Amino acid sequence: MRYSVKANSLTTLNNDCLVVAVWGKGTLSDEARDLDRGTSKAISNLIKSGDFTGKIGQTQLLHNPAGIKAKRLLLVGAGTKSKFVAANAVKFIKAAARAVCKTQAASAHFALGSIEVKDRDAYWAATQIAQACEEASYHYTTTKSSKGKALALKTVSISPFAGARRKAQSDALKTGQAIGHGLNVARELGNLPGNICTPTYLAEQAKALANRTKSVTTQILSEKQMARLGMGSLLSVAAGSAEEAKLIVMQYKGGPAKSQPYALVGKGITFDTGGISLKPGLAMDEMKFDMCGAASVFGVMNAIVEMKLPINVVAVVAAAENMPGSKATKPGDIVTSMSGKTIEILNTDAEGRLVLCDALTYVERFNPRTVIDIATLTGAAVATFGSVVSALLSNDDALAKTLLDCGQQSGDPAWQLPLWDDYQRQLNSNFADIANIGGPKGGTITAACFLSRFTEKMKWAHLDIAGSAWNQGAEKGATGRPVPLLLEYLRRQKA
Image (cartoon, rainbow, N blue to C red; front, side, top):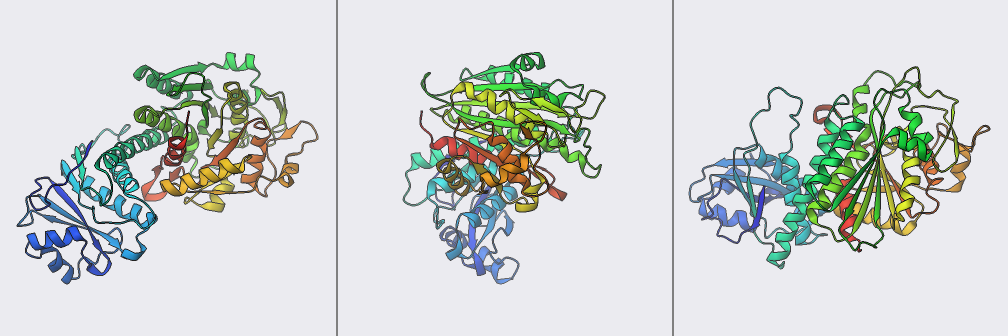
């Protein structure tokens, strides 16, 4: 889509869909009031009928309203004006974007210049509009025989927000578009079935990204290469599968050559049966989403290329398939990680940490400023947070604080859990340096404690996205999170 800022008179603006806000209890925004006069009170008459109240996220489409040139007028409820904070603004903007994308409008104008978000600025609002339009434009069709109608929407414009420079708002639209593109890359990879999105497929996507831009280089490590490096932990997960594991390394060079990179490490279990510790059959199809940490890394890398961020980033994806088989790792087996630490595998379904620990050891060689790993790691995170927030644990309080703030700012929240030594003893083993599970209590914390044993030399944070990475039910599918949080963090960094 193409995005722009336009200051045209709303009554003379000739486009396919004009979007305006109506506050709760039918109170008109400044733009809605102007259009109400131009349309012989079409808006206020609708409100008087009781069919539209201005409740947050409510939408009403008026076709060919008399008195204005726009072919459609979309009213969107903004709720209580005094409570129009970021969370409500996101609901409002997403409802508007979804409603526009459901029409056959090729052009849309968001006339929201008078709308003030209490705890955010105009740059944030413009970013959210473009991001929401890109998100709403995504529909999974890859493996469907009927693709349906193509999205009609091609151009989106906004009225300038009061007190904000036009150039800044135009830049904000580009930023929001890039974030939306990154989200959709992650969603598409997450939604693909496991027979298509294999470790080899992910490696091919990394190569394709490098072929599209000179700012990215890609290296793919085979199982033989990983074996020579001593990655016995990662390889133990792939032992039962016919699909070869891959360690995917993508380097983005946007800063000076000698500038330390920021590192992202993604869990890429393209399908997780649980291995010998087999999962129940119910909802096992959702285990294609177990690579959503890797998917988010791909989304971020695509977006930072589009944004041309002036920093260096290294992304490592540990991709494997966890299957039962005659060569599969068994409970009680002991493997040696790349770090040299030995691991007693008490449960083969706790495989994410086994691939991540070797990837985290590998990323040390790049001397990163910070390391963030992203993984659909524990059911305990789902039980604790549901789908609302991602779990955050870190060995660096300053990094954790920054990530929490980035989550709030981007509308992609996280919540910090303690990474205390008191939990480490749950990983004790009589037969190895460490066990791969810590028992039934504090599962999200002990999983992070396991990873912390391999990140002692780095400023590191862990995002457990098991609850936030995909939706269930009628809206089943990958969410693309935490792409917005990660991009907010990287946008703030300097070379």
